[in-house]
Amino acid sequence: MSEKQAERKDFSEWAVTIVYMAQEGVCAKCGNTLALGFHRHHKDGNRSNNSVNNLELLCMECHRATYRGAKRKRLQSHREYEKKVFDNLNEVIESTLKGSLAGSTTERLLEAMSTSLKLSRSINHIDDDIEYPPPTITVFRRLVEQNALTDAYMEGFKACLSAVRVEAKGGPG
Image (cartoon, rainbow, N blue to C red; front, side, top):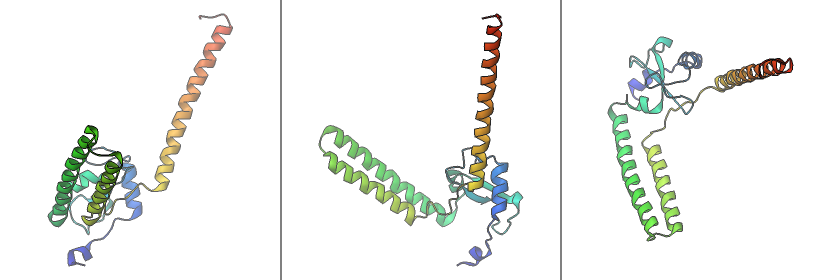
């Protein structure tokens, strides 16, 4: 472990929860949802400054945009490899559509491409340190959404009952 890595401290879980709620579950840079995963990011770049004010949660792509040095090279290496695999995928699809590749061969090639991309992600540490929202936040959000839906349903139900009452009394209708 290098000296710089030894200095690094992690944000506490409570700080992550507070910031997640303050950001309303979206990336601080682009506004995309963090439900699919996020990274903790030191705003000032100082890895030992773990005050809540220095923490922001970023989606994976926005965090990758902050990479420098070896991390950036690994990401570029993976993306170059990914492009080659997708170019090969297009060739496989074209060959399959022309009838020059059997379906079973296509299946094996697709599986091999998928496996090689997963291996590249692992070798290049593309998905390291991805976190997901704490279960308590997820459950709380679902409860809030469920309550909002229930309230909307009840308002519609009450409006329908009012309309039926007006019609029963011989009112407009």
